[in-house]
Image (cartoon, rainbow, N blue to C red; front, side, top):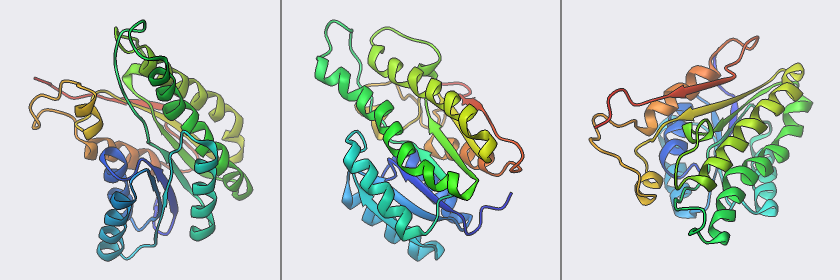
Length: 239
């Protein structure tokens, strides 16, 4: 399916998977609404994409863990873009520690960003897709949403919840021709992973943001009559 001239909103667009997905979509002629907390990152990417691909790029600075900011950003971008065909819920955070040791505010912030942020953005965007009777929503979850691990109680809880919310929403809106997908990558070589202390290893063998972007594009290009319910992507041979 051609994506040319469609519109997409991407959260966490300033770096990592979000930035890689923005570039991949721009190459297909998709007009973009980009959300991130860093205005400088958004401005830099906006300039790169508009000059390189001739598409419309709107930006909105927001902390999606805060409902008012998330809703305001989505409403602004939809108004500027005029429609919404694709929503990529990518923004997230990760910190690790034993449940009894991690500060409760830190634990809660992971839930607020990864789960509630995805909820806030989706709830704000969904009425437009329902009115159009179509669209695609892709939520970036994680292998941590499929199996728990020591020191990952907050992160795992958030990603398990994202997968559950994704499946429930899928059942709600599939009759409105809205496709809802959860992707579950293992560790990706991003700034987030490095800051969280995850083992990155050899860059030539580690999964890159562009690899996840390829999977996103494959899901979006499926014929409208079908969708990818969930899919995992793993590094072949990490060292």
